[in-house]
Image 1 (cartoon, rainbow, N blue to C red):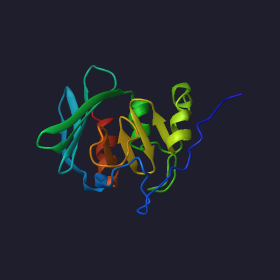
Image 2 (cartoon, rainbow, N blue to C red):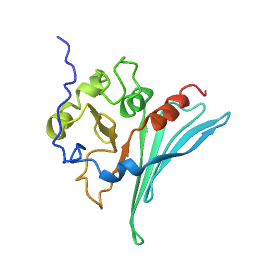
Image 3 (cartoon, rainbow, N blue to C red):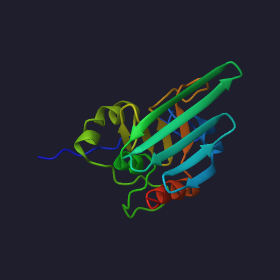
Image 4 (tube, rainbow, N blue to C red):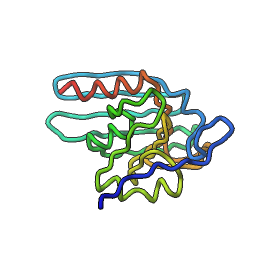
Length: 173
């Protein structure tokens, strides 16, 4: 008997965003794309946040770094390693054939199924503990937060432009 991930409906605010997702995520925009013979990266930036997705040849996987400026004296930052599968799930890049804005088919690997508790507790389409949680176009790295200022996690609203730039990274090595 195989177990599959069950997406769960999260609690949402009046703006339809999950309560764990910061509303400033819509201010995040594609800032820079870098392709070289040894490094590929995408930087996504907001007024007080930045996220960079990078891979270096011949390394495997992706480093997702993020930084949040809460005030002139307070900052949060971090980095997580993601496999190709993690990155595709986080950024909703699967070729599920569903229309833009709808949840993609979740990755049903054993590792993903082991993260069902995150979806049961917080709601979402897909999650990997310590790496990300996503509901539709709402992505949080490294996990859910309160959705308020001061959270040590980053929220990104995945626009078609952001998704296309990250998807292109896979074609550059």
